[in-house]
Length: 323
Image (cartoon, rainbow, N blue to C red; front, side, top):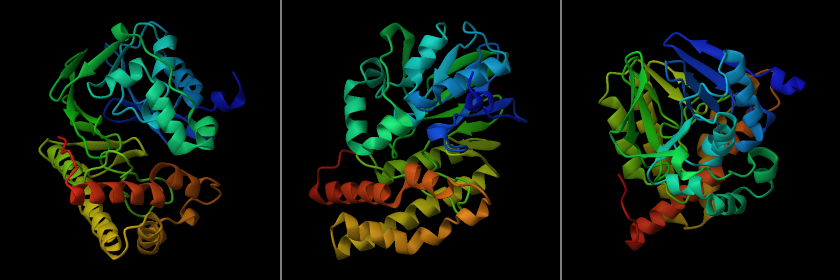
């Protein structure tokens, strides 16, 4: 095992959740995985293919043998969350890979997923993510809204269809602890960020669906909210209310720019001028990746492109509502 893998970061939380730093792109605190050490151990999120060795090493460090992992649940099929799912399936041959029914075909045959990701990410695809490998159909469990997973020991996960960020997004509610694992539906809060930032990438972002998804979480009796990017947010109700307000503030800012000039550079620059000071790399002394993390996961241009596509489709009458 190389030195980088031997330094895999594992964090134990009070509600019987083990956080695993996937070390995406060789950086700390980019994408978190969460292990629920129930009788049927379950991993939520695995990160991209290129960092999967860190996740496998962490699971072994925690004490899981290759036959022990029962489930991998991915909130959606973007490569920073599910790109390594095929590698987890190979490393843990008893694990079932759980994904939304919308996303399941793309994990079974990821050719289109890989092609579209390469168009979006360019050289970052090879440097940070890597390609998703196919998963046999009998290893996949495609879930719909309200489906449940029984982990044993009285622990049940409920899968909630939560589109908005992506049409293949699910949130996970842990009935035993009251925790929500929110993927990207709530947004991004990384080291060096003063405020929560929405994640609104193309091609699927829809404002109404994203708002409904956040409101659904508020209907639950919540104790904790876990983000993929990155870690828990407390108190969860306050964090969700803030997420709704922040999403609509960004949307209003982007729409005002769109109404002025329907052009990506203009919308991007407007968002930069309004929100750039909410990221301060100086809040994380000695961390060379504070700005890079933010641009990788919730960059101004990516968010602007998602808003712009949404506004155009809405105004053209070509938007197909989801959720």
